[in-house]
Structure formats: structure tokens, C-alpha cells
Length: 362
Image (cartoon, rainbow, N blue to C red; front, side, top):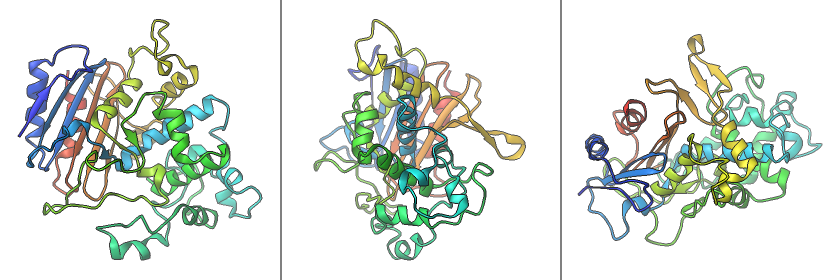
């Protein structure tokens, strides 16, 4: 069953061409539940579908696990704290997390910027993560590795590369960033994220813990069996955010040009706060290049690619039974949010389809 609608939040009715585009794209994704949503400067078109019968709560109003697509939320949080003068990008994580604690000289040089941009030299996950995770890899690999263990693993780490010299994607590093910001501000990560990002942007349906029964999307394995709710253990900052597709669009709309940031006629505090406006601008700015001929560009927290319609910024994520995609084109006010409730596999078309909506839509 499928549905394509212009939601009440939209500034204009759904364009038939956009509705058809989303319906065709959804047909290429094999999952029990699919949501594809496009916003152009706040005018929204949302398509819902999938192989399963819809439940009592519309799919676009269920909270979905974002997995690694949580990282842009962590990036915006850091950028806002920097704009407020509470921390600096060049602050050394170990000094904030455990002042005076003896660490390896290479660990001592790791900054907040290194942690967020995957240039810290840390591995993707701590070395001792795998023995406890492998026996429950398909059910609960992270829940048995709590926050204090993540911190201890960082403080005793021996990075292979000098910070700032190589890019290596690391859930470990971004998780350490979350614990470091909590220590630096004296505020738990969940509270900090709510105060600095979720509340100001009015993301009322975004959280880092499961909500009441019936409000969460349910993930599925490839064979269709249900997957337990994700427990990220001590890796909260790297992958614990869960949000409705509508809230995902709100988050993206705040990043696009022309949404009213700094507009004196805007009444929303999120549109006039100078530190949030500065943070949103900062996370859009390219800061590093990597790969052959330095063709891969990144901002603090987004992958940054060219397209025929200007630069696109995006991040995808996957959990044990769900997938998510967030992306936007700052020059044209286009935002794409997508979710699917089936575990990723090699021939999966989900990310390619959502990326195509972002890069190929006029």
C-alpha cells in the first residue's frame, strides 16, 4: 500500500511530478516500510509505502533509527557549543575528558575536530569491542559496551596514525566526542543534545531513546523477521538518534539556504539565535579532502559532493534492521529524508535511490 501527500506542514500542494518521482523511487526499494520525503524551502511531499500493511500510526510519524545518520546532529551540537565559546575545535579531548590522566602522546594530540571529522587515527571501533559483540552480532552488539568502557578504551588507545593525517571512518571517535562534550559542559549527552539542537529546532519527535509503545518503526532482517530495538550502549553520539521522517525534514530545512535564518520577521527562536545560525553555516562549509586526487570532500559532519544543481551534503545510516538517509542542497533549498525498515545488504538500492533524488531532481 502506498500514499503520496502534501502534508499540513507544507507551504504548497504536492506537485504531481514530484509525487510521481517519489512513487517511482519507492518502487525500487524492497522493505516492509518505506518513507521518501522531499522539501523545497518548506514545501513538502512525502511518499509512504512498502511491502507491509500500514499500521495505525502513519509511517512518516513513526520514529526511525538513524544509525550513523545521527552524526550530523552531533556535528551541529559541537558547532553550536563552539559558537557559544564553551569549547573550541582545537581543544584536546583527553584534557577535557580526564584532566591529568596519563595517555599516549598521540592520544594527547587528538582534538574535538579530529574526533568529528574521522581524522583522529582511532579505529572504527575499540579493539576489545568485538569479543563481546560477535556472539550477539545480529541482536545486540553494542548494548554490552557501556559509556565508561568507551572512555577507558580511548584513554588507553594507541592510534596507528598521527591525528589529522588520515581519514578513517570511526564510530569510536564520534562516541568519544559525545562523552567529551558531556564532561566539558557537565551535562549528560542526551540533555545537551536536547538543549542545544532538538529543542531550538523544535524537533519534538526526535530522541535518543525508544519512545512509548506504538511510536517506533520496527526493523526487519533480510528474511523479514523482526529486529529488537537498537541499544547503542556507550556509542550514543555515533548512532542513537531516532526521528520521524517529518522531523528529519525539519532538521534538514534548517540547513538549507533561504529558510529564514536571520530573518527579522521570523518569530521562531531557532531562526534568530546567532549561535545556532553560525553553527548551521559552519557545518555546511567544506573542511577537508581525501582520496585519490583529493576528490572526496567533507564538511565537519556531512559528505559533500558536486551535482548538476550545486553541491549536495548528505549522510546515510543503518542499524540492525533499519536504514536512513539525510541530504540537502544548500543552494536550491532541496532536502531529502528517507527511511526503510529492512537491514542493508550488498545489492540494496536504498541509499542509491535516496541519493539520486537529491542529486538528480531539478
